Structure formats: structure tokens, C-alpha cells
Image (tube, rainbow, N blue to C red):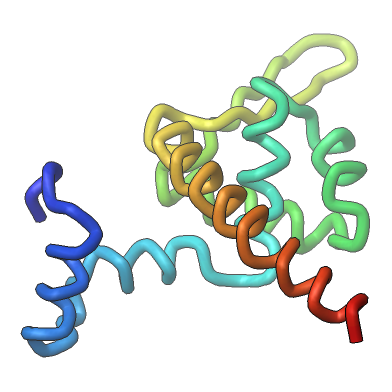
Length: 128
């Protein structure tokens, strides 16, 4: 896809063609799918480096096993970097890769959308 395409041009492209399996939107949504991936990426956006326990606190309802599993998936996808320190005591630190950091504008756009539309929705509910 061209990098300088506008949102309107992209919408027209979507409307005029069949949905493809290799659609970049579909592939990105699949990468971010799952209950915890976006939460973990967001937590890593807020801090340059996190240990396992810090991530566990940042995503409080996730189990240790699920956090481990999602971190492994994100590491395999090239979104998260895992660095193990063989010291006493040993520890592991997680951070976003360059590919993971490239998702930050996506989170920014989600925040703008949320500020615009979710704030309006909650105001509409309080007016009733």
C-alpha cells in the first residue's frame, strides 16, 4: 500500500475491491487480537523497560501463565524484546522492538478517537 494515501482514498479502495486475506488492516487486527495483547503493548508504551512483575501490576487481571504466553507470542511476532540477565538474582526485562514502537501512532489515533467519541457517548448517557 502506498504510504501517502489518504484515509478517503483508502476507504474508496476498500469499497471498490474484494476483501483480501492479505489486507493490511485485517493482518494488523489479527496481530492485535486477543484479550491481552493490546494491554501489554500499551503497558510497554508507558515504560521503556518492564520486568515481569511490573507488567503483571500494569495488567492486573491477567494470570502469570497467560502473561507468559502472550509475551512469548509478541516476542515471536517481533513486537516485544526479551532480555535475560544471568545475574544473582536473575531477571528478565521486556521492551518494545522498533516494530512494536511503530504501533505508537496507532495507539495515539485510538486515543484521539476515544476522546472524541467516547466522551460524547458518556455525556449523552448522563443527559438522559
